[in-house]
Length: 289
Image (cartoon, rainbow, N blue to C red; front, side, top):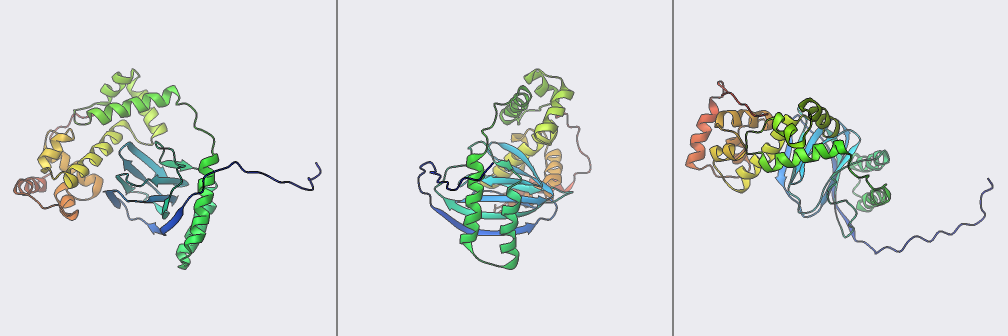
């Protein structure tokens, strides 16, 4: 086909946007490294070059792995945790903008074009080149990909099973939930539900429940100043020993130390609970999930 001699394209009219880059860089996370829970007054995006981790926010738990970008919108309380076995290596950019392009219920994105964009930002970071306009140019490329990406298809029946089970967990996480309860709620076989969770979320139903409980636990410990015993009960654990052991496996420290490290004064009741945390060798039988 012969190339046209002259082409003039008229883009659709769009409102002008403000865009300011407030920071960028990269990080090799150590196993289990945690940020948050906290919120910022700006967007933060991360692109994972290798490894994996989990993003927690008010809408759920989202596994993130190599080749994926995750977004934290302004004002969104979030926490992200590096995997204990394969901690992530990522590049990040913080920015403020009047553009409203990111879907309100989507926080993890996959597109092969992100790779070269974030390698350009990584290069600036490694060379110590402080050029926010260059980063803004790359951010605009990301905006273009998000804006022109094909609209998500309606959820499949399989995905609806998973979403319904997650909604059940979000509402009844403080009960002694079993996988059989979830399967009965969505009317599918227990083994099938496990397979669907692994397919769509990358974790088992039990892992999803535990992750969600731990997100709630950190909020209760740091934002509402509950005692450790109260937090354990509020998160569905009938005893402080099991709760403390699971919390330490998840975050690498006890609930009491986590609260202290996040600036929460330890009450007398919490001091007593901390003493109980020390002896975790005899774990009571836990029938959850």
